[in-house]
Length: 250
Image (cartoon, rainbow, N blue to C red; front, top):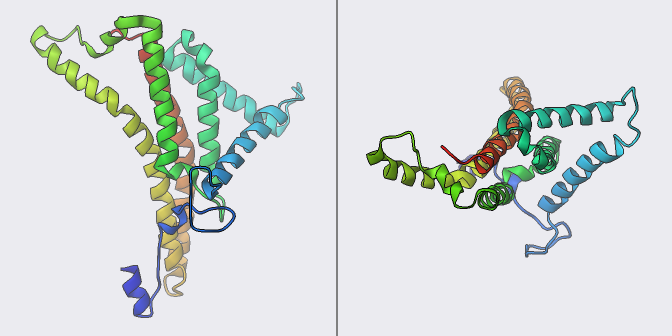
């Protein structure tokens, strides 16, 4: 439809072009070790997290700087989440969960900058994060509980005749976790950026430009909220899955 509009003298909108993976140093081929815009913005996210949590807090001042205040707020927020959702015995896994949250929320916010690249809009990125959580929780469940971890799939409170059926359902839902975990994050980030791009295309038409600009502002504000909420949802689900590994009985 966008191409037809272009042929008729109208505007041409390609909202998905912003998600194209491109080599940093020219060329068209993207290999396994090719530096791309994705790797650049992931590296910037890691750098930003390091500057905030390491450089920003190295003074450990009694009266904290802005960077130290933000770092302490994030630390307390994630620590309480882990403790409340997964229990006190899950605190030993706090560094991993804190790393997940900070990387995702930072990557989400960096993706909102003009001319940036939203790395968490790519399923290849979010799938790796989700699979890392899935494998960690599964391995941890068997290491800590042995075969008792299988009790997660056996609903002992249900009638005996229904337990095998529920076990199959629980097993399927368990293996679907990394799929839903990754698609939820990537889908929400991609959808918001695509909508902003569409409204930005309509801003070129003078008659509807004011409406388009207002829509962009509203959607952008919503995307700022979504950037945090999706990082929170990904992290709290990780805590829920961790709780299952630590306490697998139904």
